[in-house]
Image 1: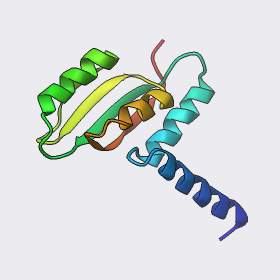
Image 2: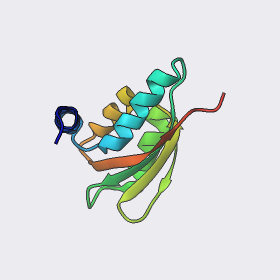
Image 3: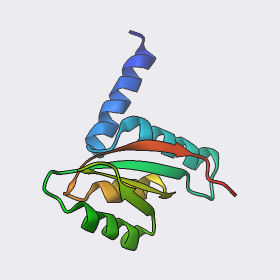
Length: 111
């Protein structure tokens, strides 16, 4: 393995340790878009996996009221949230102890 690949692997490991329950590829894409297109947060579609036993409807309402995102159910323990968000906001959402993991996609926001 080359030195660059080793450094990249170390970087990914560091990111995983910083925000443990967010998919690293999603974090990279959001941060890339934040830098490539400054001034507007990327359009992000989050798939949020909740712990078993969490009231999904209540958590969905919390996300809507706190962050203003469109949200909907995705199965028994999952939510789908859509909106313009930066990495700082995704990390804030990920701090919720009811959330097991967050994955999704990020694209440039429409102007």
